[in-house]
Image (cartoon, rainbow, N blue to C red):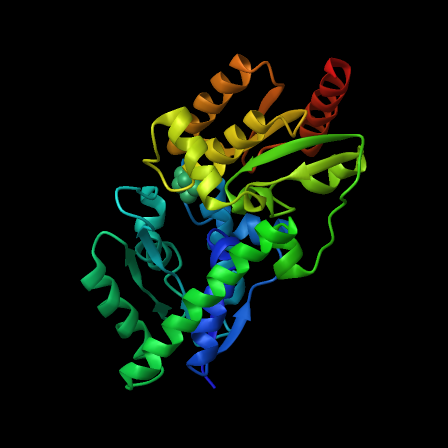
Length: 314
Ligand code: SF4
């Protein structure tokens, strides 16, 4: 059976069920890299220039950790997931960057995802499926199952108020506490415990109920993004501005924490919009910026101080 390596980083948290359904239907065996560790991070950091954002460095570390364990590594190039909404350039060039900085990695399985070019999208998916079968109907069926699985995954998180870590990794988050906070940002920052120094458990340890973007329906996030920013330009704008704006407007949280990667262009714009809205609505807001130099003690102090302030204001 062909073994396909899946790096547990970047888009993994959002699309793993979709990828699993697709490759399962084509008879491949998936090998998912282990959770991020200091060694995984260090190996990724050593391969790319310092200016590269931390999540991409982490991704490279996961690719390195899969060498020798699989026949291929799946690295999609996701340009756009909806019309006129663009992904950051790091996602567009991810396969090329991976090959360039890790020349010893197994062959990559690539697929170009661009919802603005549907015809090319279909041929790209068929080309991916051809590594496993020449039967286009089998690839088509795999793609259908993948989309269905993605829809069910998203719907379950909204319906049951769960995070990707709970659904994918069986973690259980705390659902009671004396205050509540909306935690917004890219899934690869919110759910990688090494990258964010166990931010969710840290908040829960302080008696905080954590609400995340995955618990809000796409329609509600879209509506909030439209009200705050006139619509999305960047992928993930709904998960940051939309989810944060939704929770503030509904008045269901005592404060908002956003998490961004140091040097991330799209995030710096999004966080500014959310910051302005939170100030206008007089809702406590803070933004945590992460990179490989972020010290756990510093982050813990900031989080504790923020939660103290939230409680005093209540
Ligand atoms: S959106 Fe920001 S954090 Fe994510 S890959 Fe691009 S630069 Fe890095």
